[in-house]
Length: 214
Image 1 (spheres, rainbow, N blue to C red):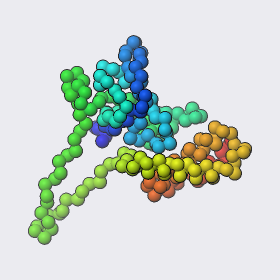
Image 2 (cartoon, rainbow, N blue to C red):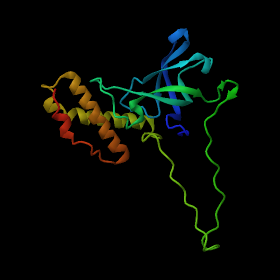
Image 3 (cartoon, helix red, strand yellow):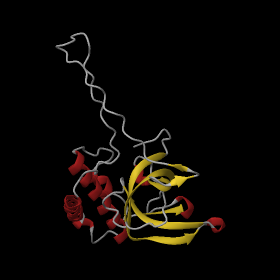
């Protein structure tokens, strides 16, 4: 759920196994280094993201598992060519933890905003012909992969990665390992997005990937 500040989002964050390390930040501030997966982390990113949070605003004990946090959007990530992403997706940014659900900060216990109560039932058109029937507003979806069974997601990810690998066979002998791996990953993500949404990705044709310099 997005707050009034477009750079702050209440979201689910999963701390990975062995993903907690105590470190010392700038000016000697005690921190945690966390390996996490956000709601928007692509399935192809199996190693997760690294984020840092001060100990004084964190739970006393952090273990592997899923937490609800208020995430603050930070700077853009860069790709393997050290070029910044265009910022069109949440996973292209680095994120920091601003607050944890239920943790007291400066004497105030915070919690994610609750959904608005359901509106009272409206009279049917037959009872009051001149009163319009209230329409349900669509909810904003932040992650196209939300709600998909993890096992099913693993199967789809393996299938799309295999398809992308097959397409790269004709150029495998001539291409560099780095370019080949990057291209297979990008094509796999496009296939996976089509499988989930049914939307055709039209920003560039597939042959543009194959025509890049090795």
